[in-house]
Length: 515
Image (tube, rainbow, N blue to C red; front, side, top):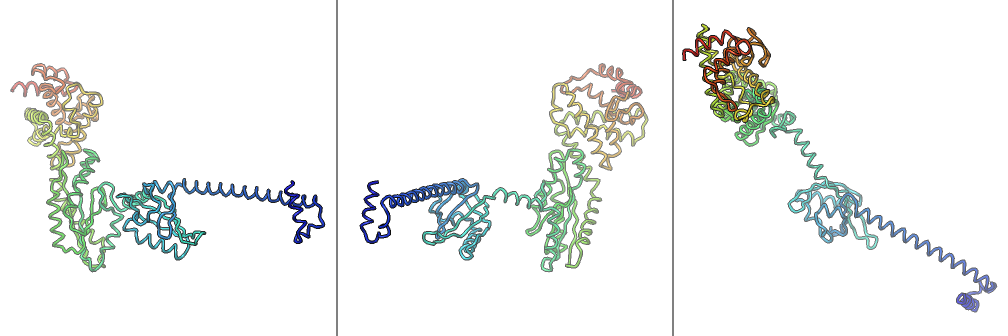
């Protein structure tokens, strides 16, 4: 207080302080106290505002540093002045500051990024773009949202970049786009792509346009008999073979389950026909484990822009169907022959068993006085009665123990598989029913339909009897064979139950006694 009083005395003694001459010390002290309080209030207010600014700055720094996207601030030389945590993750390094951004740009994105910055500098407004960056050898796709700013201190330009990593999203978009134009199974184009490609090739300088149709023979049979997985494998193998022979600039599209179309620019009839011959030869027999598949082809030519695509397609389709009709029987027979050969190769005991059953069945048929065609049918059915086992797990043939209930149910399906295979071929269709019903029992307790007595075709009853006798005599992995006398007794014990009694009598008394 003494300091203030002294100050007042000094003021009163000065001419410039005449305004205070009429005031007493107490009045001046009061006035100064008010000024003091105001200064203290203003000081507190400035301190509070400074604390708020510090807090805001800290919040801004926190938001900047912890933002879920990458932020960079570049100076006028495009060097990094500042960066946040997500930028470290994006660029996979914490040594970004002071580096220029250009080395991180993918070569294909250099120009795009240059024009992006140029727009910011010239327009002085925000701008967005998408570019690719390189982190080592890794390519990332990012979206940029950028602003041009000037430093308050010196007005120097700088650039604020918000960077969103869209690598995964971009890959997903590409995958969706790819799938919209490509067949998912084979990777070749699909029907959606085809329409645009035909339009693109319909130009004078690209005509004539060759159109080749390809159709996989017997694919439905393979799908129905061996499952769609086997069919899919066959399709993939066939497509890969076809692609290997296609000239540069051609395209292939899948337009159906087993149908493909090949488009060729600047192709005359001679070239189209020669390519079809090449493809036919390459696809004569496409192997897949136990089977083979062939492909039918047909071609057409679009000579002029005005000629309709439908006309050319019909021309190719007609040629293809003539080809399929010509080879239909041999294709189906080929599948059956391949399946049988594979079964016998894997399980030689099945071949020996089938031959013995065939011979026994023929002799029973001859004793019964059946016609030549029926005896021949018995011979064929005996050889093919277990062809459906081609789809069974190999372990079932090698198992030394009794089959489980599930394994027995799996085994029963072989008659239906065999039926589908044989019924698909005109050459073997007449024995399909014989094979289907050869495990029916005389008392109706067999499979697959539970037929009984005369409902069961005669040939099926004969094959079923001869097969059972051969199995009982020669045994299986899990069961030893019986002596002939015991096997005969087994037949008599099951006469009227499993077997036709009259046929048991013929087999035992007229066939086996003669051996």
